[in-house]
Image 1 (spheres, one colour):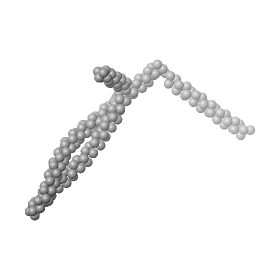
Image 2: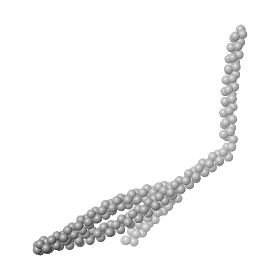
Image 3: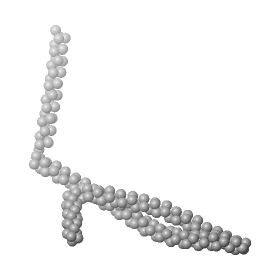
Image 4: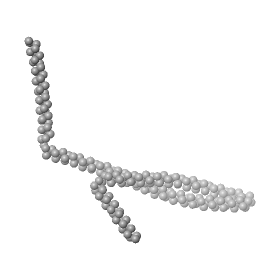
Length: 204
């Protein structure tokens, strides 16, 4: 049964990877953007873990200092009780000292482990930030290549249209100039006619 589920899982993962590969072939920019979003989210999560780890480290340090101080205090009190001949108070102070000493040792070990874990998290965080920056650079490179490809595509299309209809734009421009010239001529003739009529009216 386990083998069946394992094969089903492997097949499912293979289908996912195949779909991602096809998606990357069709639109590498979209897949890169998806990776970027996921990496940014994961980087933010690690940053939050680091912040919590710092707080935990500080709490361990505070508890350790308190336990160590109490152990030292009870040790001094045991000496005072012994000098005063208070055996019961001495035994109580010594028992308290042992409890605080054990707690301080345990807290010190936990603090050291927390320090090590914090260093590992910070190391991973720095690696992730570098990876994220590299992915941003990769996206800019892809965008540049994509822009160049689109520019070449448009230039090729314009060149193709120009080769198929080399004189179409010039012909359209000539027709526009002819229409404009006709309008000017009509306006000139009308203006000249009106001027001649006014001159005739004056001479009569």
